Length: 158
Image 1 (cartoon, rainbow, N blue to C red):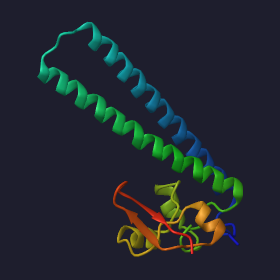
Image 2: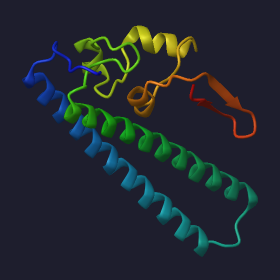
Image 3: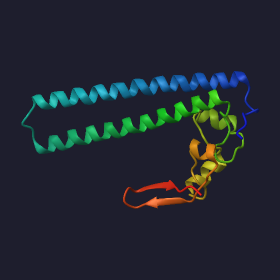
Image 4: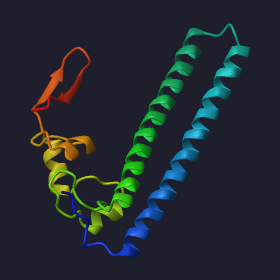
């Protein structure tokens, strides 16, 4: 069973929660601004038809770049929401891979961190399975499989 992080005080947990909520608000504002800019750009493009092919390529690149940034921001929002849920569950600050406490310095730098530095390093080297909360809840750490058609890795239950 998962345990709460006894190394963090209630005041520290509140501070991390406030930091996460502020970062979440900042990212939401950024995403909304990007969406409005993309919509504005698309509506002005329609009024400029016909346009040169090079201009169309530049515009398409800018839209694709903005969509990529928005996707990245949405993923970060999901990580922040997961961290806020871990605070509510009492598991915030515990490495989801090793079960060890995540040091305060790491949480100060990345308050939505799921893993301690050691486990994150192993994940980057692809030596350890990347676990999600449903894997942890079920404790069925199946072997990782790679689906060439979709290009995604997944876990097969044991």
